Length: 187
Image 1 (cartoon, rainbow, N blue to C red):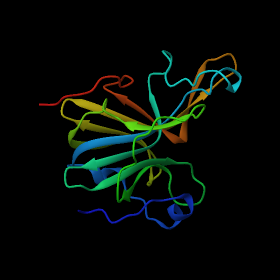
Image 2 (image 1 turned 60 degrees about the horizontal axis):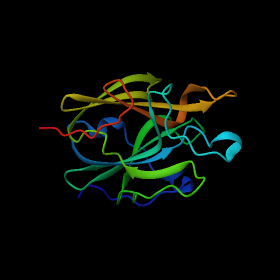
Image 3 (image 1 turned 90 degrees about the horizontal axis):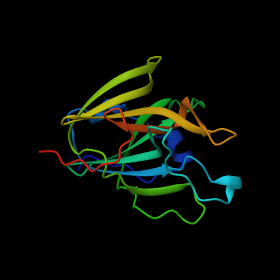
């Protein structure tokens, strides 16, 4: 197994060297687990949490664990420039995947299997950068499907509509240009 990392908190992150997203190029992905962030806490923070909306064509996550066929695990994160040297999308080595769990009542976070993302050999292509080290957008082609990742976040506006803000610490995902909704079975 290639991975030799540990569970990380923010203080540890400062001392870890992030890996470029291209580390996944040529690897075979066998599993995706992500921590999803809701689009809204609900009306006046006491309504039902809103996980998707027809006007938002993205799945919004704060982290994505990617397991490879050799057992290695990487965590995909996005980060604002705060002096740590971690800008945009990057990877960290992990010892294990996060465990899927139901969102607690009222929580805007849930960790779940991302079965709607395709598995198989990955071809990674950076599509937008900000300077030499900040990857803002990347496409990961798996079989005939393209997983697009964007360092951005969905902000709820007054009135119940939403705005996309790029260069943020969340990760917005699309598969083949739409919000992923189906489980992919590749030949």
